[in-house]
Amino acid sequence: MNARLFAAVALATALGLGHATVDGQAVRGGAVTGVDHHSGVDGVFAKYNPSTPGCAVGVATGGTPVLTGGYGSADLEHDVAIGPETIFEAGSVSKQFTAAAVLLLAREGKLSLDDPVRKYIPELPDYGTPLLIRHMLNHTSGLRDWGSVAGIAGWPRTSRVHTHAHVLEIVSHQKALNFTPGTRWSYSNTGFNLAAMIVERVSGTSFQDFTRARLFQPLGMTHTSWRDDYTRIVKGRAIAYHEDRDGGAFHTDMPFENVYGNGGLLTTVGDLLRWSENFVTPVVGDASFVAEQQQPGTFADGRTHGYALGLFVGRYKGVREVYHSGSTAGYSAFLTRFPDSHVSVAVLCNVDTARATQYAHDVADVYLGDRVRPAASRPAADVTAGQYRSLVTGVAVTLARDSAAARTRAWTFDGGGRATATDEFGTSEGFQRVEPVKPTAADLAAYAGTYESAEAETTLTAAVENGGLVLKRRPATAIKLTPVYADAFSAGSLGTVIFRRDASSKVTALSVVQDRVWDMRFTRR
Image 1 (cartoon, rainbow, N blue to C red):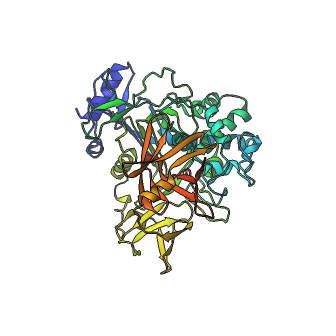
Image 2: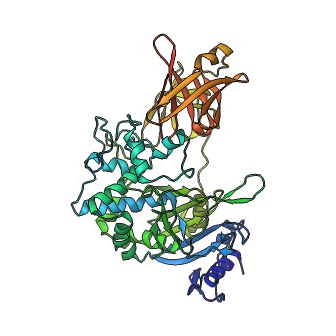
Image 3: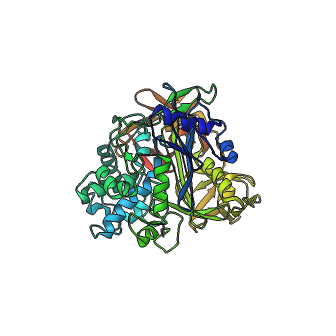
């Protein structure tokens, strides 16, 4: 019996389930007969076994589940195997459900996607420019990601119990957006937390109850709920794990936060396949409802980008794909659908080293067969090699003919040290060539001091130690700063730190720059 069948049988037996399903065949009471297993799928998950965490996988073709099963262990302490009814946390795969809940209210006339967010969330600062619900649902809001802000303050997600009250408090302190809403694209969990709050405020019921009644129950998603109380007992839930990169030991890595809408969906691969089929044969909503949710968004100037309402829309090896990935603590997830082939794949994993997106695509290859084309090899980009500073964020990238930065966007150069990078949706960003620096002792001393941010509600102290610069944050964090270019330093997980000068060249502030927070300003005391 292969690992997938073992896992399905073990779960059915251990949890007393009536049956599990593998390759469309019933597994009952620990016995399996007549199963035509897919060796190609087995190969995708070959590394997982009863002594490791692992993944559940589900595949539907033509609207019918043809494979649901599991590999590895859902609970290493109690030797519970992963099976088709194991519940995992789906991370950002959850976002499409939040968007659907908002869209239901919009179609009932209780709100509009083009309403200002402050109409429902007055705690949000007035940024002097329209910030709409639609902007939040397709990541063009410019809202700083609250988890990134909390991380800058020393409390990253999974390090303390965050609630929606914390989200609102963090959002209320933000004096600026990353950009003018509708002009650029930047992934932000904040918008989906606020969207869940809007559903509660408009519907007058909890997000849990609203989605259960309007989304999950109509589709028979009986194993799906939200982690709105991390202490709640959830029967059949897989424990999440962190895997040591050196020794291979496993440690529990569970999310303990009461935020949802951005993530927090507890579900199974079977329930996700039911949801995916709703986009083909709607039970929740109708044809126009599911079409609207899958319509790629547009920027203010009319350009289309690749994100709809809680869903990415693109292509995989030449095949049209609607999808989303997710990860929270040790969980990772991927749900994808190939509309033209009527194939859906769901993968849910409970260890942080798992690659749910890759696994799902590898499984899709098995079922799509010759409908997928091998990914074309991309020629080395023709770039002027060197280090370039973004004129938008200040972050530096190193360009070379074989570098990822060179291949992901189209680059043009003016010959005078300036460059422009344009992504596939036509969004351009200016860059200026900068040279590496080696600050002198006097240079480093000029940065030393204490810097405060009311937005992050924390203080950073720059100090010279052992010939280098460090940033200290209470209670006992010291972050090494590595020079990148003049006044800019790499700060590891903190991102990029850029010291700011006034007209007289005196250092008066510093900025922390990350992917989801473009300029968190700290003022020098």
